[in-house]
Amino acid sequence: MREYLLTLCITAAVTYLLTGPVRKFAIVAGAMPEIRARDVHREPTPRLGGIAMFFGLCTGLLVADHLTNLNQVFETSNEPRALLSGAALIWLIGVLDDKFDIDALIKLGAQMIAAGVMVMQGLTILWLPIPGVGTVALTQWQGTLLTVALVVITINAVNFVDGLDGLAAGMVCIASAAFFMYAYRIWYSYGIEAAAPATLFAAILMGMCLGFLPHNMHPARIFMGDSGSMLIGLVLAAGAISVTGQVDPDVMNLFSGSERNTVHQTVPVYIPLLLPLTIIAIPAADLILAIVRRAWRGQSPFAADRGHLHHRLLEIGHSHSRSVLIMYFWSALIAFGALTYSVNSASMWIVLGVVILSAIGLVLLLLPRFTPRAPRWAEAFVPPRYRRRKVLPETAAAVVDEGNGPAEEERAEEPAEPRTPVAVGVSGVNGATAVGPRSRTASRTTR
Image 1 (cartoon, helix red, strand yellow):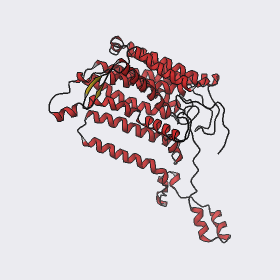
Image 2: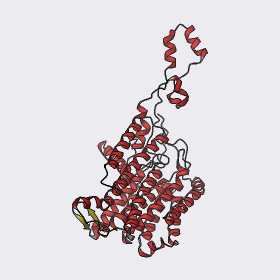
Image 3: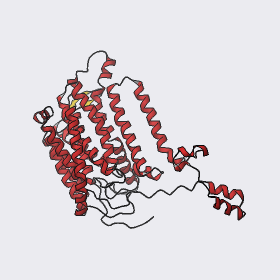
Image 4: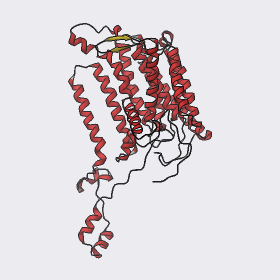
Protein backbone atom coordinates (compact mmCIF):
# COMPACT_ATOMS: atom_id res chain seq x y z
CA MET A 1 0.00 0.00 0.00
CA ARG A 2 2.83 2.43 0.80
CA GLU A 3 4.31 1.96 -2.65
CA TYR A 4 0.94 2.56 -4.28
CA LEU A 5 0.49 5.74 -2.23
CA LEU A 6 4.01 6.88 -3.10
CA THR A 7 3.31 6.36 -6.80
CA LEU A 8 0.03 8.24 -6.48
CA CYS A 9 1.63 11.21 -4.70
CA ILE A 10 4.53 11.51 -7.15
CA THR A 11 2.16 11.31 -10.12
CA ALA A 12 -0.03 14.02 -8.61
CA ALA A 13 2.97 16.23 -7.82
CA VAL A 14 4.43 15.97 -11.32
CA THR A 15 1.06 16.66 -12.94
CA TYR A 16 0.44 19.64 -10.68
CA LEU A 17 3.88 21.19 -11.23
CA LEU A 18 3.80 20.72 -15.00
CA THR A 19 0.30 22.14 -15.51
CA GLY A 20 1.47 25.74 -14.97
CA PRO A 21 4.22 25.63 -17.64
CA VAL A 22 1.86 23.73 -19.97
CA ARG A 23 -0.70 26.54 -19.57
CA LYS A 24 1.87 29.10 -20.69
CA PHE A 25 2.87 26.86 -23.60
CA ALA A 26 -0.77 26.49 -24.67
CA ILE A 27 -1.21 30.28 -24.70
CA VAL A 28 1.94 30.76 -26.77
CA ALA A 29 0.94 27.92 -29.13
CA GLY A 30 -2.48 29.47 -29.67
CA ALA A 31 -4.45 26.55 -28.23
CA MET A 32 -6.96 28.98 -26.74
CA PRO A 33 -10.06 29.32 -28.95
CA GLU A 34 -12.37 32.28 -28.88
CA ILE A 35 -15.54 32.36 -26.79
CA ARG A 36 -18.76 31.31 -28.48
CA ALA A 37 -22.29 32.13 -27.41
CA ARG A 38 -22.98 28.53 -26.40
CA ASP A 39 -19.86 28.17 -24.24
CA VAL A 40 -20.17 27.94 -20.46
CA HIS A 41 -16.94 29.77 -19.71
CA ARG A 42 -16.79 33.53 -20.26
CA GLU A 43 -13.05 34.07 -20.74
CA PRO A 44 -10.71 32.50 -23.30
CA THR A 45 -9.09 29.55 -21.56
CA PRO A 46 -6.14 27.50 -22.85
CA ARG A 47 -6.37 23.76 -23.19
CA LEU A 48 -3.68 21.08 -23.74
CA GLY A 49 -3.80 20.17 -20.04
CA GLY A 50 -3.48 16.56 -21.18
CA ILE A 51 0.23 17.17 -21.75
CA ALA A 52 0.84 17.49 -18.01
CA MET A 53 -1.40 14.49 -17.32
CA PHE A 54 0.50 12.31 -19.80
CA PHE A 55 3.86 13.14 -18.26
CA GLY A 56 2.33 12.38 -14.86
CA LEU A 57 1.34 8.96 -16.22
CA CYS A 58 4.86 8.33 -17.53
CA THR A 59 6.39 9.40 -14.22
CA GLY A 60 4.05 7.14 -12.24
CA LEU A 61 4.94 4.10 -14.35
CA LEU A 62 8.64 4.94 -14.12
CA VAL A 63 8.54 5.28 -10.33
CA ALA A 64 6.57 2.04 -9.94
CA ASP A 65 9.13 0.23 -12.10
CA HIS A 66 11.88 1.13 -9.60
CA LEU A 67 10.00 0.16 -6.44
CA THR A 68 10.69 -3.18 -4.77
CA ASN A 69 7.22 -4.72 -4.86
CA LEU A 70 5.59 -2.90 -7.79
CA ASN A 71 8.54 -3.81 -9.99
CA GLN A 72 7.13 -7.34 -10.10
CA VAL A 73 4.14 -6.01 -12.06
CA PHE A 74 6.47 -5.07 -14.92
CA GLU A 75 8.37 -8.35 -14.72
CA THR A 76 5.34 -10.66 -14.73
CA SER A 77 2.99 -8.67 -16.96
CA ASN A 78 3.21 -6.72 -20.20
CA GLU A 79 0.09 -4.69 -19.40
CA PRO A 80 1.90 -1.51 -18.20
CA ARG A 81 3.79 -1.33 -21.52
CA ALA A 82 0.57 -1.96 -23.41
CA LEU A 83 -1.11 0.87 -21.53
CA LEU A 84 1.77 3.26 -22.21
CA SER A 85 1.73 2.44 -25.92
CA GLY A 86 -1.99 3.00 -26.31
CA ALA A 87 -1.91 6.11 -24.10
CA ALA A 88 0.92 7.67 -26.12
CA LEU A 89 -1.01 7.22 -29.36
CA ILE A 90 -4.31 8.56 -28.06
CA TRP A 91 -2.53 11.45 -26.31
CA LEU A 92 -0.73 12.48 -29.50
CA ILE A 93 -3.99 12.53 -31.44
CA GLY A 94 -5.60 14.56 -28.65
CA VAL A 95 -2.81 17.16 -28.69
CA LEU A 96 -3.15 17.58 -32.46
CA ASP A 97 -6.91 17.86 -32.09
CA ASP A 98 -6.65 20.51 -29.37
CA LYS A 99 -4.53 22.60 -31.73
CA PHE A 100 -5.83 21.83 -35.21
CA ASP A 101 -9.35 20.32 -34.69
CA ILE A 102 -8.93 16.90 -36.29
CA ASP A 103 -11.84 15.33 -38.13
CA ALA A 104 -14.22 13.16 -36.09
CA LEU A 105 -13.61 9.97 -38.06
CA ILE A 106 -9.85 10.31 -37.63
CA LYS A 107 -10.26 10.54 -33.87
CA LEU A 108 -12.59 7.54 -33.83
CA GLY A 109 -10.10 5.55 -35.89
CA ALA A 110 -7.27 6.57 -33.54
CA GLN A 111 -9.26 5.34 -30.55
CA MET A 112 -9.75 1.96 -32.22
CA ILE A 113 -6.08 1.74 -33.18
CA ALA A 114 -5.01 2.58 -29.62
CA ALA A 115 -7.26 -0.18 -28.32
CA GLY A 116 -5.84 -2.55 -30.94
CA VAL A 117 -2.27 -1.71 -29.88
CA MET A 118 -3.12 -2.67 -26.29
CA VAL A 119 -4.77 -5.89 -27.46
CA MET A 120 -1.69 -6.86 -29.49
CA GLN A 121 0.45 -6.51 -26.35
CA GLY A 122 -1.79 -8.67 -24.19
CA LEU A 123 -4.16 -6.18 -22.55
CA THR A 124 -7.42 -7.79 -23.60
CA ILE A 125 -10.45 -9.56 -22.19
CA LEU A 126 -9.85 -13.31 -22.09
CA TRP A 127 -12.97 -14.50 -20.28
CA LEU A 128 -16.14 -13.22 -18.71
CA PRO A 129 -17.78 -14.37 -15.45
CA ILE A 130 -21.49 -14.60 -16.24
CA PRO A 131 -24.02 -15.14 -13.39
CA GLY A 132 -25.74 -18.50 -13.63
CA VAL A 133 -23.34 -19.74 -16.28
CA GLY A 134 -19.86 -19.37 -14.80
CA THR A 135 -16.64 -18.37 -16.48
CA VAL A 136 -16.97 -18.18 -20.27
CA ALA A 137 -13.76 -18.19 -22.33
CA LEU A 138 -13.76 -15.83 -25.30
CA THR A 139 -12.22 -16.40 -28.68
CA GLN A 140 -9.52 -14.05 -29.89
CA TRP A 141 -11.91 -12.12 -32.11
CA GLN A 142 -14.56 -11.89 -29.43
CA GLY A 143 -12.05 -10.60 -26.88
CA THR A 144 -10.63 -8.07 -29.34
CA LEU A 145 -14.01 -6.69 -30.36
CA LEU A 146 -15.20 -6.45 -26.76
CA THR A 147 -11.97 -4.72 -25.69
CA VAL A 148 -12.11 -2.18 -28.52
CA ALA A 149 -15.77 -1.45 -27.83
CA LEU A 150 -15.15 -0.92 -24.11
CA VAL A 151 -12.22 1.45 -24.79
CA VAL A 152 -14.13 3.54 -27.34
CA ILE A 153 -17.27 3.78 -25.19
CA THR A 154 -15.32 4.73 -22.07
CA ILE A 155 -13.26 7.39 -23.85
CA ASN A 156 -16.32 9.08 -25.33
CA ALA A 157 -18.38 8.73 -22.16
CA VAL A 158 -15.70 10.50 -20.12
CA ASN A 159 -15.35 13.21 -22.75
CA PHE A 160 -19.10 13.78 -22.87
CA VAL A 161 -19.15 15.02 -19.27
CA ASP A 162 -16.11 17.23 -19.75
CA GLY A 163 -18.27 20.34 -20.02
CA LEU A 164 -17.84 22.07 -16.66
CA ASP A 165 -14.74 23.11 -14.76
CA GLY A 166 -13.34 20.16 -12.81
CA LEU A 167 -16.21 17.82 -13.70
CA ALA A 168 -14.50 15.10 -15.75
CA ALA A 169 -11.31 15.01 -13.66
CA GLY A 170 -13.27 14.85 -10.39
CA MET A 171 -15.67 12.15 -11.54
CA VAL A 172 -12.88 9.98 -12.92
CA CYS A 173 -10.91 10.48 -9.69
CA ILE A 174 -13.88 9.30 -7.61
CA ALA A 175 -14.43 6.32 -9.89
CA SER A 176 -10.74 5.36 -9.89
CA ALA A 177 -10.66 5.56 -6.07
CA ALA A 178 -13.49 3.02 -5.86
CA PHE A 179 -11.82 0.89 -8.51
CA PHE A 180 -8.49 1.01 -6.64
CA MET A 181 -10.14 -0.25 -3.45
CA TYR A 182 -11.80 -3.11 -5.32
CA ALA A 183 -8.69 -4.16 -7.25
CA TYR A 184 -6.47 -3.89 -4.17
CA ARG A 185 -8.88 -6.13 -2.23
CA ILE A 186 -8.75 -8.74 -5.01
CA TRP A 187 -4.94 -8.58 -5.07
CA TYR A 188 -4.32 -8.44 -1.31
CA SER A 189 -7.18 -10.47 0.18
CA TYR A 190 -7.24 -13.28 -2.38
CA GLY A 191 -3.54 -13.15 -3.26
CA ILE A 192 -4.22 -12.84 -6.99
CA GLU A 193 -1.19 -11.21 -8.63
CA ALA A 194 -3.13 -10.69 -11.88
CA ALA A 195 -5.04 -7.84 -10.18
CA ALA A 196 -1.84 -5.88 -9.43
CA PRO A 197 -1.69 -4.05 -12.82
CA ALA A 198 -5.28 -2.80 -12.47
CA THR A 199 -4.49 -1.59 -8.95
CA LEU A 200 -1.46 0.30 -10.26
CA PHE A 201 -3.44 1.87 -13.12
CA ALA A 202 -6.10 3.10 -10.69
CA ALA A 203 -3.50 4.63 -8.35
CA ILE A 204 -1.77 6.46 -11.21
CA LEU A 205 -5.09 7.66 -12.60
CA MET A 206 -6.03 9.13 -9.22
CA GLY A 207 -2.71 10.96 -9.14
CA MET A 208 -3.22 12.38 -12.62
CA CYS A 209 -6.67 13.73 -11.73
CA LEU A 210 -5.72 15.04 -8.28
CA GLY A 211 -2.71 16.88 -9.69
CA PHE A 212 -4.75 18.53 -12.43
CA LEU A 213 -7.86 19.44 -10.41
CA PRO A 214 -6.41 22.48 -8.55
CA HIS A 215 -5.83 24.16 -11.92
CA ASN A 216 -9.16 23.05 -13.35
CA MET A 217 -11.64 23.87 -10.59
CA HIS A 218 -14.04 26.74 -11.24
CA PRO A 219 -12.96 29.20 -12.49
CA ALA A 220 -10.60 27.00 -14.49
CA ARG A 221 -7.20 28.35 -15.50
CA ILE A 222 -6.69 25.56 -18.05
CA PHE A 223 -8.76 22.81 -19.66
CA MET A 224 -7.55 19.26 -20.20
CA GLY A 225 -8.86 19.23 -23.77
CA ASP A 226 -9.25 16.06 -25.77
CA SER A 227 -5.61 15.24 -25.04
CA GLY A 228 -6.56 14.84 -21.39
CA SER A 229 -10.12 13.52 -21.54
CA MET A 230 -9.31 10.77 -24.05
CA LEU A 231 -6.20 9.87 -22.06
CA ILE A 232 -7.93 9.38 -18.71
CA GLY A 233 -10.76 7.56 -20.45
CA LEU A 234 -8.28 5.10 -21.94
CA VAL A 235 -6.50 4.54 -18.60
CA LEU A 236 -9.87 3.96 -16.91
CA ALA A 237 -10.84 1.43 -19.58
CA ALA A 238 -7.46 -0.32 -19.31
CA GLY A 239 -7.95 -0.91 -15.58
CA ALA A 240 -11.45 -2.29 -16.14
CA ILE A 241 -10.22 -4.60 -18.91
CA SER A 242 -7.33 -5.84 -16.79
CA VAL A 243 -9.34 -6.79 -13.71
CA THR A 244 -12.36 -8.06 -15.66
CA GLY A 245 -10.77 -10.12 -18.38
CA GLN A 246 -7.43 -11.13 -16.85
CA VAL A 247 -8.37 -12.25 -13.31
CA ASP A 248 -9.68 -15.83 -13.27
CA PRO A 249 -12.67 -16.05 -10.87
CA ASP A 250 -11.97 -19.74 -10.22
CA VAL A 251 -8.72 -18.77 -8.46
CA MET A 252 -10.75 -17.19 -5.64
CA ASN A 253 -12.04 -20.62 -4.54
CA LEU A 254 -15.41 -19.23 -3.59
CA PHE A 255 -17.57 -22.14 -4.69
CA SER A 256 -17.87 -23.97 -1.40
CA GLY A 257 -20.34 -24.40 1.43
CA SER A 258 -24.11 -24.06 1.19
CA GLU A 259 -25.85 -22.68 -1.86
CA ARG A 260 -26.80 -19.47 -0.05
CA ASN A 261 -23.25 -18.85 1.16
CA THR A 262 -21.91 -19.58 -2.30
CA VAL A 263 -24.22 -16.97 -3.84
CA HIS A 264 -23.10 -14.36 -1.31
CA GLN A 265 -19.42 -15.24 -1.63
CA THR A 266 -19.40 -15.18 -5.41
CA VAL A 267 -20.56 -11.57 -5.59
CA PRO A 268 -16.92 -10.41 -6.04
CA VAL A 269 -16.80 -12.64 -9.12
CA TYR A 270 -19.66 -10.79 -10.78
CA ILE A 271 -18.80 -7.30 -9.58
CA PRO A 272 -16.11 -6.93 -12.32
CA LEU A 273 -19.00 -7.06 -14.77
CA LEU A 274 -20.82 -4.26 -12.93
CA LEU A 275 -18.08 -2.07 -11.48
CA PRO A 276 -16.72 -0.86 -14.83
CA LEU A 277 -20.29 0.09 -15.72
CA THR A 278 -20.82 1.92 -12.44
CA ILE A 279 -17.57 3.82 -12.97
CA ILE A 280 -18.91 5.33 -16.18
CA ALA A 281 -22.59 5.11 -15.26
CA ILE A 282 -23.19 8.87 -15.29
CA PRO A 283 -21.10 9.54 -18.42
CA ALA A 284 -22.61 6.54 -20.21
CA ALA A 285 -26.14 7.64 -19.33
CA ASP A 286 -25.36 11.10 -20.67
CA LEU A 287 -23.89 9.56 -23.82
CA ILE A 288 -26.94 7.37 -24.48
CA LEU A 289 -29.39 10.19 -23.79
CA ALA A 290 -27.47 12.53 -26.10
CA ILE A 291 -27.47 10.00 -28.97
CA VAL A 292 -31.20 9.27 -28.56
CA ARG A 293 -32.03 12.97 -28.27
CA ARG A 294 -30.11 13.97 -31.37
CA ALA A 295 -31.34 11.01 -33.42
CA TRP A 296 -34.93 11.86 -32.45
CA ARG A 297 -34.39 15.39 -33.78
CA GLY A 298 -32.86 14.09 -36.99
CA GLN A 299 -29.39 15.36 -36.07
CA SER A 300 -26.01 13.70 -36.13
CA PRO A 301 -25.18 11.81 -32.91
CA PHE A 302 -22.05 13.97 -32.67
CA ALA A 303 -23.82 17.32 -33.14
CA ALA A 304 -23.34 19.75 -30.26
CA ASP A 305 -26.38 20.74 -28.20
CA ARG A 306 -27.36 22.07 -24.78
CA GLY A 307 -28.97 18.93 -23.40
CA HIS A 308 -26.21 17.31 -21.36
CA LEU A 309 -26.88 16.48 -17.72
CA HIS A 310 -24.56 19.15 -16.36
CA HIS A 311 -26.14 21.76 -18.63
CA ARG A 312 -29.58 20.76 -17.36
CA LEU A 313 -28.39 21.39 -13.81
CA LEU A 314 -27.35 24.90 -14.79
CA GLU A 315 -30.66 25.55 -16.53
CA ILE A 316 -32.77 24.67 -13.50
CA GLY A 317 -30.84 27.15 -11.38
CA HIS A 318 -27.82 25.41 -9.88
CA SER A 319 -24.57 27.35 -9.79
CA HIS A 320 -21.52 26.11 -11.63
CA SER A 321 -19.83 24.77 -8.51
CA ARG A 322 -23.00 23.19 -7.13
CA SER A 323 -23.69 21.42 -10.42
CA VAL A 324 -20.22 19.88 -10.31
CA LEU A 325 -20.64 18.81 -6.68
CA ILE A 326 -23.99 17.17 -7.45
CA MET A 327 -22.40 15.16 -10.26
CA TYR A 328 -19.63 14.19 -7.84
CA PHE A 329 -22.25 13.01 -5.35
CA TRP A 330 -24.01 10.72 -7.82
CA SER A 331 -20.75 9.29 -9.14
CA ALA A 332 -19.56 8.49 -5.61
CA LEU A 333 -22.92 6.99 -4.66
CA ILE A 334 -22.98 4.61 -7.62
CA ALA A 335 -19.30 3.60 -7.55
CA PHE A 336 -18.89 3.17 -3.78
CA GLY A 337 -22.37 1.64 -3.45
CA ALA A 338 -21.35 -1.16 -5.82
CA LEU A 339 -18.02 -1.50 -4.03
CA THR A 340 -19.67 -1.81 -0.61
CA TYR A 341 -22.16 -4.35 -1.92
CA SER A 342 -19.30 -6.48 -3.26
CA VAL A 343 -17.77 -6.62 0.24
CA ASN A 344 -20.98 -7.58 2.08
CA SER A 345 -23.83 -8.44 -0.22
CA ALA A 346 -25.93 -9.99 2.56
CA SER A 347 -26.46 -6.74 4.46
CA MET A 348 -29.73 -4.89 3.88
CA TRP A 349 -28.25 -1.83 5.59
CA ILE A 350 -26.18 -1.21 2.47
CA VAL A 351 -29.25 -1.15 0.25
CA LEU A 352 -31.10 1.03 2.76
CA GLY A 353 -28.18 3.46 2.92
CA VAL A 354 -28.03 3.74 -0.87
CA VAL A 355 -31.78 4.43 -0.99
CA ILE A 356 -31.53 7.15 1.67
CA LEU A 357 -28.58 8.82 -0.05
CA SER A 358 -30.44 8.65 -3.37
CA ALA A 359 -33.39 10.45 -1.78
CA ILE A 360 -31.02 13.12 -0.44
CA GLY A 361 -29.57 13.50 -3.93
CA LEU A 362 -33.03 14.00 -5.43
CA VAL A 363 -33.78 16.69 -2.86
CA LEU A 364 -30.55 18.46 -3.78
CA LEU A 365 -31.52 18.33 -7.44
CA LEU A 366 -34.86 20.02 -6.75
CA LEU A 367 -33.58 22.73 -4.42
CA PRO A 368 -33.44 25.50 -7.08
CA ARG A 369 -37.16 24.99 -7.71
CA PHE A 370 -37.89 26.34 -4.25
CA THR A 371 -36.58 29.59 -2.76
CA PRO A 372 -37.68 29.57 0.90
CA ARG A 373 -37.36 32.79 2.88
CA ALA A 374 -35.99 32.66 6.39
CA PRO A 375 -37.77 34.55 9.20
CA ARG A 376 -36.37 37.92 10.25
CA TRP A 377 -34.67 36.55 13.37
CA ALA A 378 -32.78 33.89 11.37
CA GLU A 379 -31.57 36.06 8.48
CA ALA A 380 -28.14 36.52 10.05
CA PHE A 381 -27.52 32.76 9.89
CA VAL A 382 -28.52 32.02 6.27
CA PRO A 383 -27.01 32.95 2.88
CA PRO A 384 -28.17 36.24 1.32
CA ARG A 385 -30.34 34.49 -1.27
CA TYR A 386 -32.70 33.33 1.51
CA ARG A 387 -33.09 36.77 3.13
CA ARG A 388 -35.89 39.23 2.50
CA ARG A 389 -35.01 42.35 0.63
CA LYS A 390 -34.66 45.37 2.88
CA VAL A 391 -36.29 48.66 1.86
CA LEU A 392 -34.26 51.81 2.48
CA PRO A 393 -36.06 54.48 4.61
CA GLU A 394 -36.00 57.12 1.87
CA THR A 395 -37.41 54.64 -0.63
CA ALA A 396 -40.27 53.69 1.69
CA ALA A 397 -41.02 57.38 2.40
CA ALA A 398 -41.12 58.17 -1.29
CA VAL A 399 -43.54 55.35 -1.87
CA VAL A 400 -45.89 56.58 0.87
CA ASP A 401 -45.72 60.21 -0.29
CA GLU A 402 -46.74 59.22 -3.77
CA GLY A 403 -49.92 57.76 -2.33
CA ASN A 404 -49.25 54.25 -3.34
CA GLY A 405 -50.19 52.96 0.09
CA PRO A 406 -48.77 50.03 2.01
CA ALA A 407 -49.46 47.58 -0.79
CA GLU A 408 -46.72 49.12 -2.91
CA GLU A 409 -44.31 48.98 0.04
CA GLU A 410 -45.04 45.31 0.52
CA ARG A 411 -44.30 44.71 -3.12
CA ALA A 412 -41.01 46.51 -2.70
CA GLU A 413 -40.09 44.06 0.04
CA GLU A 414 -40.79 41.05 -2.16
CA PRO A 415 -37.73 39.22 -3.46
CA ALA A 416 -36.47 40.09 -6.88
CA GLU A 417 -37.48 37.88 -9.77
CA PRO A 418 -35.12 34.97 -10.29
CA ARG A 419 -32.36 35.51 -12.76
CA THR A 420 -32.71 33.98 -16.15
CA PRO A 421 -30.27 31.10 -16.40
CA VAL A 422 -27.32 31.75 -18.65
CA ALA A 423 -27.59 29.94 -21.93
CA VAL A 424 -25.20 27.07 -21.77
CA GLY A 425 -24.02 24.52 -24.21
CA VAL A 426 -21.36 22.02 -25.01
CA SER A 427 -18.11 23.84 -24.53
CA GLY A 428 -16.03 24.16 -27.63
CA VAL A 429 -12.95 23.76 -25.47
CA ASN A 430 -13.72 20.86 -23.18
CA GLY A 431 -17.33 19.88 -23.58
CA ALA A 432 -17.63 18.31 -27.00
CA THR A 433 -17.70 14.64 -27.72
CA ALA A 434 -14.35 12.98 -28.23
CA VAL A 435 -15.35 12.06 -31.77
CA GLY A 436 -17.55 15.07 -32.42
CA PRO A 437 -16.62 17.92 -34.74
CA ARG A 438 -16.13 21.45 -33.52
CA SER A 439 -17.37 24.52 -35.30
CA ARG A 440 -14.46 26.26 -36.99
CA THR A 441 -16.13 29.66 -36.82
CA ALA A 442 -16.75 31.44 -33.56
CA SER A 443 -20.39 32.36 -33.16
CA ARG A 444 -21.07 35.84 -31.85
CA THR A 445 -24.80 35.48 -31.43
CA THR A 446 -26.12 36.80 -28.12
CA ARG A 447 -29.23 35.66 -26.39
